[in-house]
Image 1 (spheres, rainbow, N blue to C red):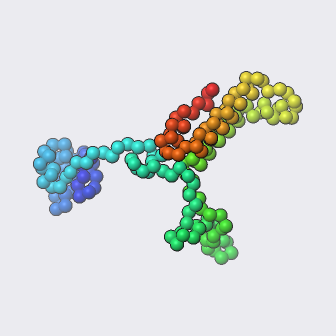
Image 2 (cartoon, rainbow, N blue to C red):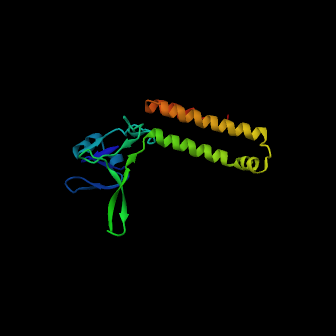
Amino acid sequence: MFLLNGKHLPEGTSFYDSNGVQYGSGWLNQATEEQKLAIGITWVADPAPFDTRFYWDTDLPKALEDKLEVKENGSPLYKQVYDKVTKSMVDTTEQVVTKGLKSQFVAQVKDTAGKLLNATDWYVIRKAERAIDIPSEVALKRTQIITEANRLETDIQASTTVEALIEVLNAQDWNK
């Protein structure tokens, strides 16, 4: 990407240099490298792509573990609620927690399993209420979903690096 004075300069748009001189929308595509350098335009390669689910930046992974938040002085940071009487925000007794990747993906696994099981929950209710057996293929599928969810939760919690977590998530198989 082209930069002028440290700012991204999109191709195909007009712009002004630091002296207030305007350049037309086609100038970047027609100018030589020397002309661009003369007014301070530089080329910087686009940043490497990265998966924003797991990384803040190319080499900056997100935290795996939950983090209890603290104030600058090191004391716990508590959630706040609005008090209608005092008309102000007041601290609760619940400390603010920033969820790490493990907690986020375990929650996602539980949600996926719940949605997959939801379609056949009525068989379980029917069995409990009226003692009508659950068809064997339905019982097997439910067992497979629960087994996969348990496996994923265990493997997610055992992950010690973001790369290991990604491997676990890439190995999901809800269709066993």
